[in-house]
Structure formats: structure tokens, C-alpha cells
Image (cartoon, rainbow, N blue to C red; front, side, top):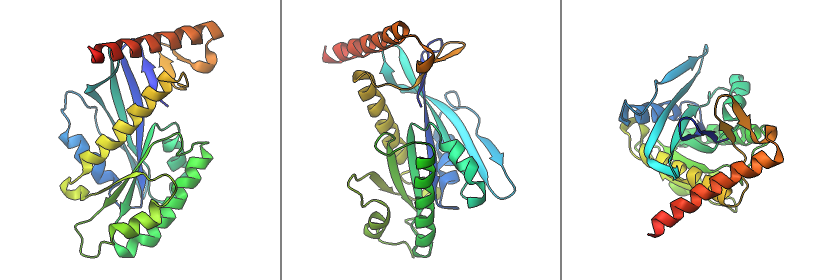
Length: 242
């Protein structure tokens, strides 16, 4: 769920990398962190368990203005791949604004991909989330390996619904299409946010010490808040037209 920080003039979005254990989630975040300007990113934090870990960092996308005077800030997470840490998985996924599912392209990992796909959807439902509302991008990692399954087969397993999701072939170890995947999910997240703001269906939070959620606002406060958001979008649209 996006959070508006009026004091810092930023809007924070949470993007979570899910997928097959040892499939490349951690490698994705490590590569992204390495490529970003140190001045615009936070520290790469690792929360380790006995057999797995969750990574997190955030960065300011200075070239992604989303409202007049506001800049996007993305928080990137990985979920633990081991089933034993499913509660942590579901907690990390909660209130995500965008999701990336990283699949292992090796033929002998197809059963693991399907199991992880099922766990992914179960946790999505457990959080009351839906892919109708949360953007998803698929990444088929390890395409460089000789036993990589055909992309068509991966699409058949993971991307054969009525709504097709963006998918990218990747080699995260070498950085191939890692940033492309991030750019795609970021674009989807920002597009959905703009649509929700325009349609007056925004459900995020406003933070200005202390945080104020939509549920805590009175009717007049909510109307005023949304009016300011619509005015910002209108000014941005007018500027683009000129």
C-alpha cells in the first residue's frame, strides 16, 4: 500500500520479489543495489534465519515524479523461499504495491516452480490481495544454463491465464534483464497509482508525523485530501500538455 509522506514530498511503494527457492531473488536485489547511486539508496539489510533470509532496501527514484512536487520512493523486499517460513512470507507480501515472481528456468526445477507458484497465490489470498489489484511481473531466471526449459513451457505453467503478465528472460548472476524487470514492475505500480488517484479509488496512507490512514480521516478530511491529489495530477497533466 503506497504511503504519502507530505513532509518529505515522497510517495513510498513496496515491491516484493517472490519465487522459487535459490531461484535468484537475492541475486536480483543485490545487483539492483549495486547499480544504484549510493546517494539515493539505503543500506541493504538482511534478516537471516537458520536456513533462509529476507533482504530489504529502499531507494529514491529522482527521475520518477508522480505528482506535482512529489517523487517516488521504492522499497524492495525478497521473501524467504523455504516453506518453513511461510508466515514470514505472507507478512512480507502484505500491502505490496507490486510483485515480481522469479522462476528458475532449469527443467529439473519445474516442480519447485509450480509449488512456489501455488504458495505465492495462497499467500496472496491469505492477505486479501488479488492480481486484479496488485501488478505482477514474471522473470524467468538462469536462461544461460544448458538445461533451461523453453520459454513457451514456462509461459504455459505460469502465465497462461486470461490476463497475461509481462515476463522477461534473465540471467541475474550477470545482471541481464534485472533492471529491465525492475523498470517494468515500477512502471506498472506507478501507472496503477495514477489511475487510482484519477478515479478517486486511492487506498494508501498519508504520513505527516503521525501517520494518518484513510479510515482515520473524517469525510471532509478525506474529500480535501483527495481534492489536493486531483489538483496535483491536473497541474502535472497541464504542464505536460504545454
